[in-house]
Amino acid sequence: MIKICLADNHPIVHYGIKSYFKDNSEISIVGHAEDYNTLEDILSKKSVDIVILDLDLEGLSSINLIKGMVKDYPSTKIVIFTNLSEQMYAPNALKAGVSAYIHKTSKLEGLASALTKVYGGAVVFSETVKKNLALIGKRNKSERLYRKLSTREIEVLRYLSDGKKNKEIAKILDLNEKTVSTYKLRLLTKLNVTNLVDLVNKAKTLEIV
Image (cartoon, rainbow, N blue to C red; front, side, top):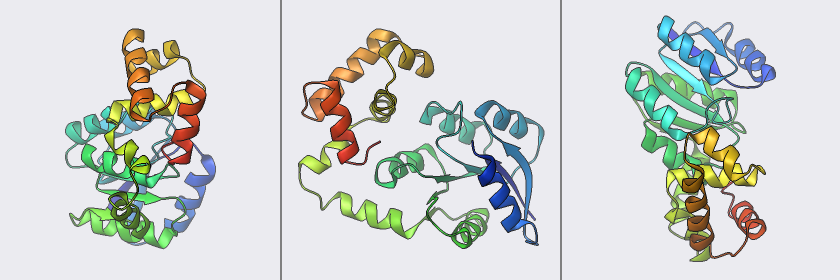
């Protein structure tokens, strides 16, 4: 029996996945978390084979937290199940040590198959992720600009796009406010824009956020 913990902000996702797997003889959902702190608590107290994790989970402010989970719970695999842009976030998530990246537009049959493969030791990409990763090298120069961004720059850009101020971002990511300003300047330079509005628009055009 594969023991699963589902970590997602949305009750409807918990209900849908729980309903889908309720009669599955191979998969058992042993934990539900609607924020990062709850997920940490579950992992510290229960034996979990796989975490189904949404990158938008409340409290999951940085990819470094995922790296920490991979390190702290080496016997637990992480499967990302999210709506966030695959071409931007899948490579970074996989570098952090997750075992699969599945977009929420995928059918639950695909998620079930990925869980079984991951439990068996495989690393799984959805077909869409494979196509997007393959396209990265074929895009023109302007579209490849985002490849120059570090994981931290991507995180800062995401929060800037959400309308958060430097001070708020610094608090979320546990950084100095001046450091956030430095990341912002780097983003303006790397994406070849001169102001925040154009930066956010460019990020949305490239599906970074």
